Image 1 (cartoon, rainbow, N blue to C red):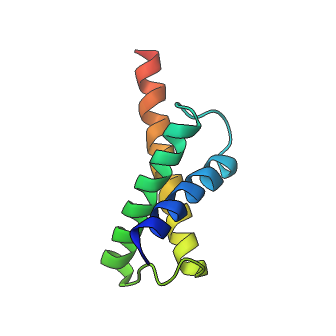
Image 2 (image 1 turned 90 degrees about the vertical axis):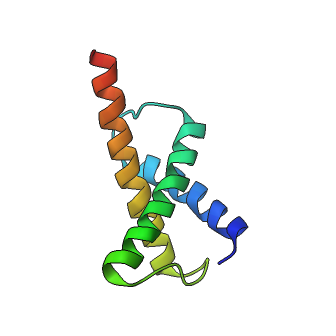
Length: 88
């Protein structure tokens, strides 16, 4: 998969992760899309490292699941960071 399609996949995965997660996460849509891109990158790296799988194709369900799960994890971590920062 090329860089442009990977960026598009990460941005869409971030939007889907935002829709899946309940409540308000810190940051707006732009921050969410960037965190989704980071989550897709980290998800792909971890999937390759742990399970020896990676991004096959833009339309592969495996690629989408890896990207969305990675985006959800990064958004959850970001939510914990911003909530603890808001309380302090």
